[in-house]
Image 1: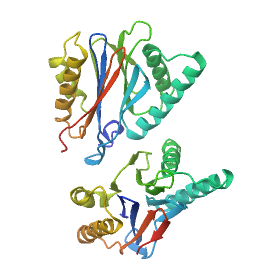
Image 2 (image 1 turned 90 degrees about the horizontal axis):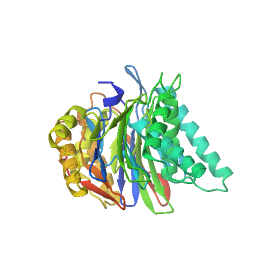
Image 3 (image 1 turned 60 degrees about the vertical axis):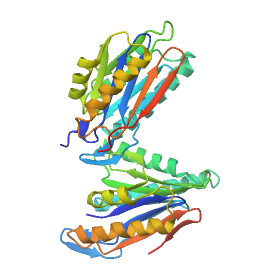
Image 4 (image 1 turned 45 degrees about the vertical axis):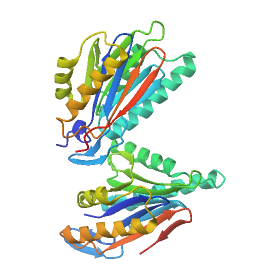
Length: 206
Length: 194
């Protein structure tokens, strides 16, 4: 209680498949035990191949959504191209470390495909910007423990987009059902080299 | 604990605020209005630390009105109004003395013809909701609203639902909050119902 990371609740996850990635989050926003909204989107589209999911204190989720979108828009104007996922990770890392002694209370996840060779990339961060690179899955939020459990048992490498969707959805859904502060709906994005598929999942509403 | 409650119906937003101004064990006033008109189609309702609330509400009110004066009488939309207020609170929370103000913004967008209710807390957490409340009132009313709220309700249906909520609060709240003011925000502007 009164921990800023678990005041509003929420969970997010990213997974790597064969030439594709998936990134997903729940839709709950609460004030401790009270559910306030079942339509609180925690994922931002940075550009057509890169996505950012944010869990933690909702006010900081909103602030960072705006801040990172602003910085990547400026990047695009300056460089005349979309930002690479690994560059985006470093941009977020330094933006978080800038607030080392009064951090944003969030745990971001980045997922994307690199522009040149469509190589899948996912990573997570702590609240002060330490990057956690991964070549399988990344989890964050109040259901972190449950998500690790689900991912360790369900994940396998080189899944095609359809199977990856099934795996990430089951991992997220079953994890948030064991967490009182997460759930209330979910969204999943599947990113492949030529399309993005967004699916809104119907979940338990309790 | 002050009560502020909002319900969005199909062509208006209803806002109810308690009339009691309490300090410690005393009720200082039984006709306190916890709302301010930001512009013709935007109403803010607020609760929180007593000095902060009116100071903050009147500060944003002045700034939103200044915007219209500068920008050739263009009215700030409910979405823009709510974003501005969120931004003020999100900046304030990381300052030396943050405003402790929770608010609801009832608005009617004259461009799209849609009513809206924005829920914002003192941290700067903002969400657009069909119905919402702050503080203890939320615990007593949300289940009632979950059960009886319908998309496409008329203003009268909304007022009936609002009355159900007020009855519940009167029944369950330990102290008298001296009734509520109910205001409606729709295409014709803001008006007091009772």
